[in-house]
Length: 405
Figure 1 (cartoon, rainbow, N blue to C red):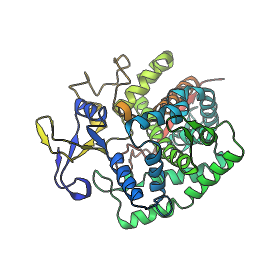
Figure 2 (figure 1 turned 60 degrees about the vertical axis):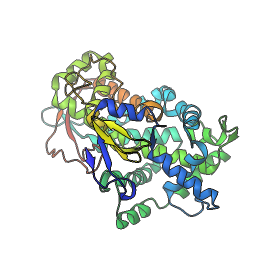
Figure 3 (figure 1 turned 45 degrees about the vertical axis):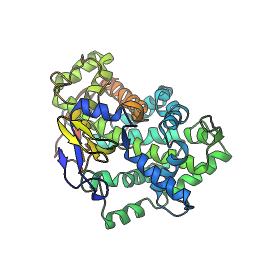
């Protein structure tokens, strides 16, 4: 699909890719299909080369982007950044948090599992009382931030993703008023994180921020600056609070839509991982993003795409591409290569927090299925969703029956 005149800065066209094979080809080759962020980093570096100092007078996102410029301006350093700085905490190393996540999940369930109405069932507003709180608390614990600050972190997180909810067009553009509101909503975030980084440097604990203040980054043979630690934490908050929430709430709806599935998973907990992967394939939290540019003329599905064109990658469509998946709209717990969906992207730029998100989802449903004997829709659901590119239900009332203890 062609979007005439919707290229970067209104120059050229944009193209929507919806086939699995096309999206896979693009995301696995960042040299040929340049990430938009790489272009932004190049522009920032050019400004620095001219003598500008973007870290002194700019927005919070530019401060975070400046850490990308200094820590991972190319693919080699992007890989090192992941391996050394984020993988041990939220990538493959996320398994270290299993006990902590389990404790948080059980604490959240404890807050509402004793409720009962006349028919012996309880009710819970699943989003505000579970799906939203779980990634917030897990992220805070990993970073070493107090739970008492979660409300502020959540507000800042919502401000960070404002363009993906209210932005116009595939480039998620905010108008001047919205940009001013976003800046106001983010007020205090940079100072808060700066204070946290300084505190961790002075009194390190067993958490990610403390680790980042102490680590010797082998790829550059030096320690990280405060601004670089800030940038890493900024992107952790940006990616860690919202998407896992959306995945959990969609999984709950799938279980309510297919009552036999709840019984199957309860009797076969070894299939829970397959369930979470299939649910992410069917209900991708991030439906699509305009994240890549062509560096040469390309052809997708017989359509010629000029060099310099913006590519909008429709992950959700690729995840149900009938040319790639047999019976694509069926939730199949026996499907092969369950994790090869596009929800976390693929290739060298895959989501760095995929590991922690998968752990949260897996443990959440292990404990919920262990502690509940039934789950169904409650009263008053409208199934309204927020606007934008993310699949976020606004409220979700559920009824449940607790297992006897």
